Image (cartoon, rainbow, N blue to C red; front, side, top):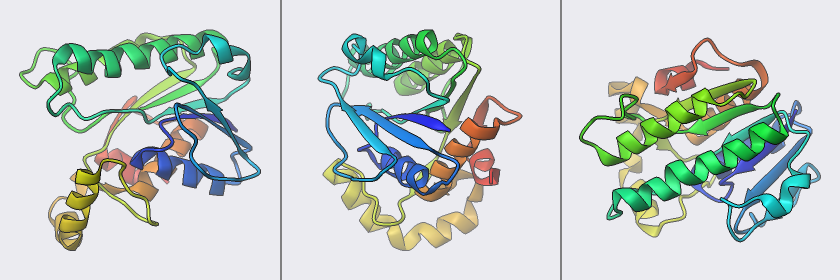
Length: 220
């Protein structure tokens, strides 16, 4: 399986990249982003672009892939709905429309979030925008498209979030992870499980197109 990975430097993207490089079923991983990951591996090639929303200059390098694992995302904290829409809906759909044109037999796996509003009418701005993004992706003529909605994510294997305040939050709450997992197992996953689940979706599919944390944890 040949895989395109967007957002490889973020916490989720790092975990997906790690699992893809370890997975013998994955023959090639190509990351696309504004910066390099800093990793070296025989399977890995990196495409650096100044603007991920405009892939026209690198389109010849984006063909022949079986799956796209889309992990790009930004926090909605302190951001207007217009700006959040630009960096979430507009960017994601720009990439997806390019890829479905170049790879119509591709499976597209999108990292959304627990609480996403598929009705697009709720009070939460981020949930509405994520819901609109999910709905639009599901309408594109990919071979298959899956929306994954993780809740709390426990980072493993030294993987860290890029924003410093996320790293501080994760460090402060780490002692609570075992308690949270026992009390709310369907709201918590790990970076390893999420990465493996996304690869399994790309390779084998699933009975649902929108997956909550319980689905993510159930996939092997």
